[in-house]
Image (tube, rainbow, N blue to C red; front, side):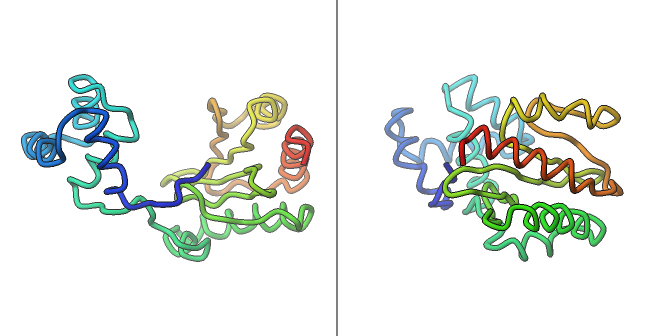
Length: 185
């Protein structure tokens, strides 16, 4: 389920309760780590204080000046953040899927565009500099369709496609259909 309150301070009462110190203590810890990189700060909190990833991320990001986890309030905001070539590709992917599955809703969750049916996510896209990642939201669906993407990098939950990928609408729609069937939607 997506976090509805993206304000990083919403984690502070839980951090104080779970780790037994007031936030002033944790800000002092972070001040001592301010010259470290993000992964080092996260590791320090996890290894030395037993922080969960979510709590460590909230404290580190807050200490770095990011007060909210929300970057995009709409899909159009997300598109504006992309390179025009990626925007065209991501829009084409969602367009072909929505044409075949018009009842799916395109939303922003975890700062990425996702397709939902009711409260269930069925397909998502994220971007990096040199590629996009598609996510069918199902290990079974990913495994079933991985052979169709053998020339690309298939990860544990995503498939990395080059920015110049030619959209295969039938393949994408078949993936979404399989995901919907698996979730009995």
